Amino acid sequence: MNQKNHIDDQDLAAIRMSVRATYISTGRDQKLVSYLRDLVKSVADWENSGFGSKRRALFLIGDSGSGKTRSLQYHFATMPEFQPYQNEYGETASPVLSIDAPRPCSTRALAVTILTAMGLPTKGRRYEDELYATVKTQLRERGVKYLHIDEMQHVIRHNTAITIRHVQDTLKSLIQGTDWPLHTIYSGVAELAKLHTGDRQMANRSSVCRYGALSCPADAHWIANILNTVAVEGCSLELAPELIEEDFIERLCLAGSGSFGSIIAIVQESCFHALEKKRATVSMKEFARNYGRDTGCLPRDNVFTADRWRDLVPSHALADLV
Image (tube, rainbow, N blue to C red):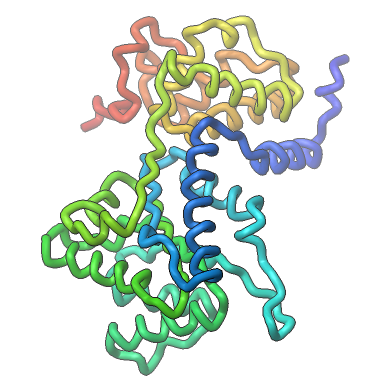
């Protein structure tokens, strides 16, 4: 009897937790780390001389599921410059404050969210200028050198030039101060680019890192690495022969719309299902089952089993119902 038949629910839960916690890197990580290093060097220059780079903002832009947030969380947790430290009062402080932009969001709501994340009251502060003055003071007093705002596109509530300019001016005010080296990191989908364009001052004060979609054959080796890391190394499963064929990697890329994080999730859930069924091998059957459940597509439109799968568009899976 195969050893996997002895895996109980507790073992499966432990495997799921371990696999989901495993960070899978790609060539994008080296690129992102170089951008983060630029921010770190700018902070160090300011601390040494009072002058750092004027590019004190980083925009990380990519589709939903591309892995932006996970990448930042991983590098914040592993790069020494982003680690918590003991301040002059013997208290544990963190140089990084990471928040999610509220939805719906305004520049005022954003300020309230930042203050709330620091455990500070916001009642009684009616004016936006007053809120941001407090934000800047408290970030400095708490030693926060890097402010990360995820889903930053939510701040663009109204797509008008005046509204976008107000948001840009607000963001610039955070990094223009000379009394503290605050650097900002904004992550979000393509709409976030609106905050970078149309304002020369904003463009001159920021850098942009793209998390583009994966494609085959250029990125086939990264997708194959996901399959091996999750299925073989993480779940101790064998790969069925059809998963080793070249077109499976292409099918997998299409099923996840090229989004790195989405592709990882597809592989994880397919392998977890194989383990739940006490199988020693993960096959096309598990991938087809989960894709059908996730998208609601008709059997003939399943990327993993259809003959004309290259003609399919995953986002159109429910087109017959519209």
